[in-house]
Image 1: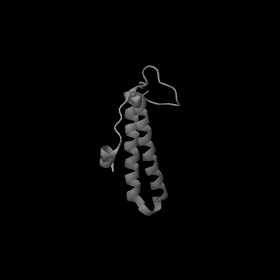
Image 2: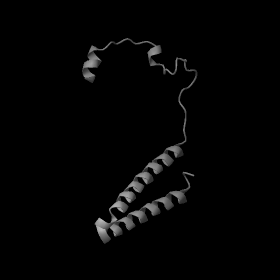
Image 3: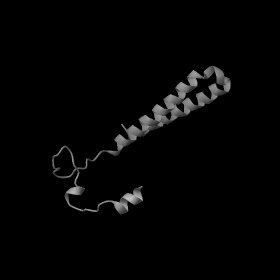
Image 4: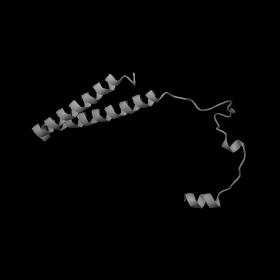
Length: 95
């Protein structure tokens, strides 16, 4: 489909076609906003720890079925989670 649209589509090039459009107002100046990298790191850490919280919830729902082996595995998982959290706080690059 992409190949067909490339060959069969119109190929009109103009200056206005490459400008960003927002609510009918022409943009003035530089439209890119610079963010600090630490905001991306904080977002990634939030997603990682949030997904790990889901794993802990799933484990807690099935704790009786998986028994003592599942408990040991979850204790090691939580230990690694806390270890990584302490490492991130100790580095102080994000806060």
